[in-house]
Image 1 (cartoon, one colour):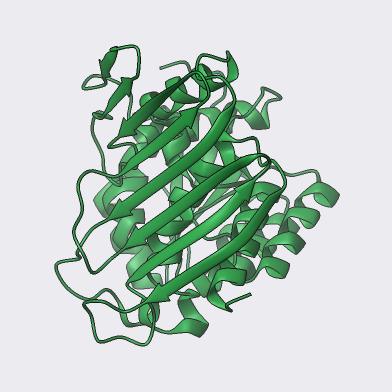
Image 2: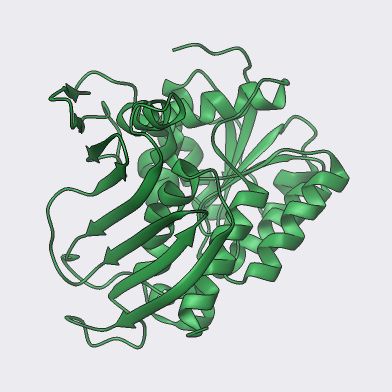
Length: 326
């Protein structure tokens, strides 16, 4: 994998995805992990032992004071993303924040503005953009192979095996369940494939279909994206086929499946085109690894096709409207 820049990273979070996915992703992508800051010094120390990280941080503030840390990957609970990203940017660090960038549109927009003022890179972890099938679909649209895009459907339904951590089930700490956990990914794909063309929420329904929780386990959004119509779907309580992104244009259609990959390993997935072409991606790079390599190159002045802070703010503003029934 091309790696034009090697950054020294600090992780915010020592469990969950930070532990199981992000730490090995940094190693696999040729980056340097200095250490992590979690909810306790003991957690940070144990994380350092597990991953061979050279430094242990007693707190986030201690990590941000380390002049050797170039970039921070934020993997804390949703309601802490805004504060942690703000502290990191103010400390002069580049930031890759897991989705959602914040749980309110205004909070996300303030972070995007802060990154511009501080001249630091701020990205949001929509790793689906780096799946080879979705990148190929994006290229097909740009070259006009599908004609004018008329309709986009981005869908991910999965019945979770059990309830997640309690913070995900409270509106004030998660911002919603299905929409903030996986719906924000499907929305980003629809926005990206249509160039964020004057997005407007036309309607939405958030409901509880399986779990007895205070937040939704099914979300459906109807949007106008420029001249195109889009339906964005997410479910954490009903099972569907492989996650997929469908694009229908005046000159053809394409369906990318298995593009949201929340794991290590090869990308997998498939792209099916109306001309009969079928492409598979069993050996394609892992989207998380491609994302961090591209982010590092971005800090060195290269172009970046991942989600910027400004794009992440548009996403959350639309989800906030859906959540509030506006």
